[in-house]
Length: 174
Image 1 (cartoon, rainbow, N blue to C red):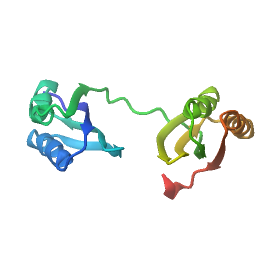
Image 2: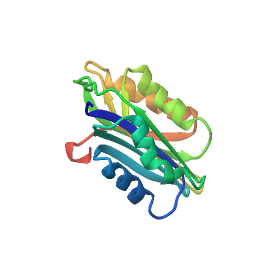
Image 3: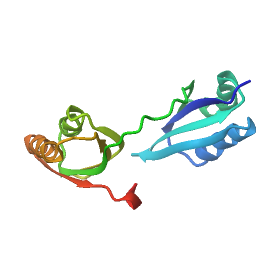
């Protein structure tokens, strides 16, 4: 059996022990967690893991089935390819957006990143009362006109009534 790579997602109502139970099930199969992220979204748990091992997907699903047994969590396992990420060769940036909350902020602003051929590598948003905050890490392609991208992002932010700042990422921030 090969050393396959799996994406495991666990989503649902938060409660103590979810990470422990998930990682215990994976370790019991001899799977190695290579990459992961977890967050709480207003009391809802969301975790994604990439893990590798000499098992098949059905074994991984079986090992994690008890997590979903109570009906408060959804667990999904799927094989993923292990193709290397193409070297961006561009530049790393941090985008911050803040202002009054309203629909369309994320779509309007990140649409400008996509239009410039940029790739968002991490995105976090928070709502505190009426204040909305977005922080994104992104890569812009080689040759991108950063001033034009920045201007397009600021104009998009203005259209939805928020402020946006694009700045170079420092290596120790990422």
